[in-house]
Structure formats: C-alpha cells, structure tokens
Length: 382
Image (cartoon, one colour):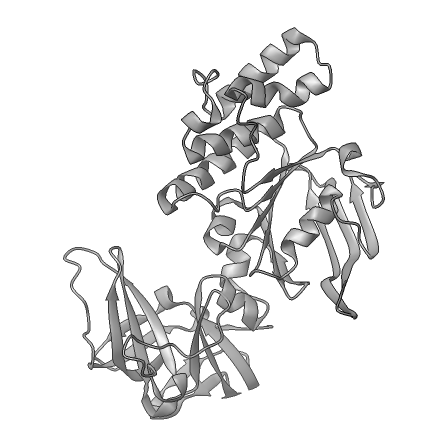
C-alpha cells in the first residue's frame, strides 16, 4: 500500500427530496482511500454507507462536494467512464453463460484479443480457485463459488478500484467466514484497492486495513481495526464495534467511584467521564480484588454457554452507573422472562474463555466481584 490516494471524497453531501422535505443521506463526508488498501464503510442500515459507495461508482451524483479517482475529479463523470467496478450482493451473473463466458464478458465487450482473453481469464480463475469449473453454469455452483465468479468478472478488467456492496450477505455463517479470508487473500494477490460496504463488524475487522464507521450520514471515526476496538472515539463506535460496557460519572484523582464500594481507575482524568471496558478484559471471582485494580460488585443475572467462552450478565450493586452496548444498541438488556437484567439496566457483560473443562466460574444468583487492569478502562474522547 502506497501513500497515493486511489479515492478521495471531499465534503460530499447527498440530499433527497421526500414528501416536500429535504433528507440528507450523507452529511459532508471527507475521506481518502490509499492505493492498494482494503477499506471498509461500516455502519447500521440507513447510515449512508451504500449511498457513499454509489457516489464513488457514479450511480449517484453528490448534491455537494467532490469525488476524485487518483487525483482526477470525476464528480460528474458517468459510471462507464470511471475506472472502477462494483460487485453486488446478488452477484448478477448471466445465468445462460458458463463460468468462463461470465468472466470473459467484459474483455470481449472491449474487443480484447482472443489470446489475451484466454490468458487473463485463466489467470483470474486460478486466483479465485475456480480452475476446472470453467464450463459450469451458475446454477451448478454453490453460493461461495458464484461469489468468486462475480469477483473474477469484476477483477479481470483490472479496475483501479473494486467496490463491494455487502457481497457476503446471502451466504450462511460458516461460508461467510471462509469467504472473508478468501477475499482478503484475493485482494492481496491482485493488489487492487477494495472498498467494502458492510453492517457486519466482524467482516470489517477481519478484512480491513482501515474502517470508516458511519452513523446518520456522518463518519464518526476512521481508523484501523485495533484502534477502533481499543480506542473508540464516540459512544456509538464503542457500542457498534463489538460489545462494550460503558460506565459514566465524575472522576476524582483518577478514580471513578461507583455504588457498593466499586471503583474504576482512570489515571490522569478528573471530572465527568464516560469509560468503556471490553467484556474479555474483565475477571470474575468471589474474592475482593487487590488495590491497583478497577473493581465492582454485583450479582450474576445470567450465564450463557457459547462454546469457546461463557458470557455473564452481572447486575451491579446499588445501581452503579453502567450500561452494556452491543452493535450500536442503546438499550437495557432483557432476558426471556421479560424482566430487566438489573434495576435501571445497570449491568456489565463479562466474557470468560473456556480453558479446559468449560466449567462456569459463577452461576446465576451468585454474588461476585469484577476486576480489570487500569489500562483497560478507556475514557472515550481522550
């Protein structure tokens, strides 16, 4: 990956008129995608990510702002004159054509010499692991194989960038996870810039060099996967990227005091703070933790066995101020019997890996202490 920008958006706005009102789907997005980068636009439905991609492709025209490809202003250039290709969730393969003919279609439309067509199609089918299936029809392929045909067809024309709009959405979980690794491998081998739209945080974290997290038409944070997860810039990002426990209050001398004798260490911070701590960073036990650790008391409200780990929902003592957020949710966690997990929704989620015998550390109703190291309390916005 070089420092050269393959794609640039400068203060891009997209407005629609609906029932006499102006609706802003994209609200002044500015970002750049480096040459050879795997870049993802991540966010919930309706956040503007697909509209942003369609403006890059030329299928939508910005109301305001500029779109550049390799430094060239293409804001008003039609899609067929932009050196980008797009892969959709539906794949849009030609059902009456073989795998070979589907992949070769674009080259033949450009009147590419026959020998070069054979060479490039053969090379691309090898890259996407479809050699030997050239004569098959799309209906004879699995969903993952059809997706690879769509990729090969888009990549064989050697675009400057490939735009992918939730291409794994129609696949089952196991195949989707396998295809995430395949997509990253293919992108690395061909060296083409990928821009990937998804609402699935795991997809974005698995494949991306950088991720733009979008919410309500805006980019809330643009960073690498580790930075987004460990140092979220906003409460929304903290909740949308994985599961996050949020604790808010007034810190004094680098310590946030909670009900029931709880303490959250936030060295160097005073005044009102919002702290996030990830569930896998927390230790659950019956003994009071040593000084030098963040520690809160609570009662186990729920235990869920998830194979590789147990998930605990712990109701904090005396209604200490904590909420659990997952994938952008802003709501109290509820259980199957309809009751709230804790008074006022004050719960903390803990993930504990199953090491040997998969025995739960605590059971529902147990009184427990939760503890974690000071560096695992991240003050949002710091």
